[in-house]
Length: 317
Image (cartoon, rainbow, N blue to C red; front, side, top):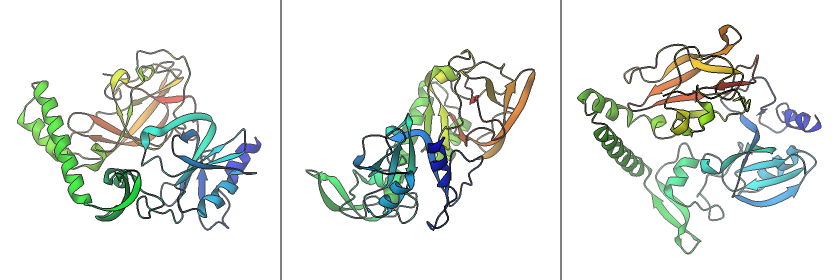
């Protein structure tokens, strides 16, 4: 309880000059706020640690260090773990950990690659880390024996090449499926220019599928906000008909209560219903959905605040 109070304090301290919205609050505005994500950490990018009485100590110390991009708070040890990367720069290193929470520096964060003390691995990493990265000089450490050297990154060219490579791969995928309908090819080229179709996280665990039982009972309350694609054992998309409770490794099962959008519709808002008891829509929440031509993406922002757990988004084929 003491730790939760410390986390909650970060959402109400206004003397810091910014607002910090923690996961223990019911709802968190999405613009202009940083969110502490309980039960998650960034691994492999810790460059120093420090003991502190509360997470606020980590925050103040992080602000005084240009290298600090984010930090993990170790709850049981009252320890700050300072990262020189964010989860946006290294999404594969963002992992669950019940004894930590992750916090991304918001105020006056030094952009990755902008100083020699904070070199990037590549132009691609800079683009992933910085939402509004522009072409110019960046410090990279992979050009010369881990020594930071300035290099020019042409961001517009890189994005174009990335889209070209991805479009080729998707075209090959359609060819293998013998699905070369001109309409589908048009859809492909429409969506290759939708940034969300290039940047997303994958949900692959088979216990998300509608055919899985309720054990272990999991909850998507702490699922990091972002765009997700169902892949592998989790299926390929969300179901669009009522799913019985106690499936998908949870209690209340989440399903899309209307048809998926077409490519031409672009980004649309849809309602997800959560089944409980005899009610197929006992709780609900709005999400955004995009049809990327050969797959769907869903923007998840946690679960309904009035009853956050145990609720989970289900997958099907």
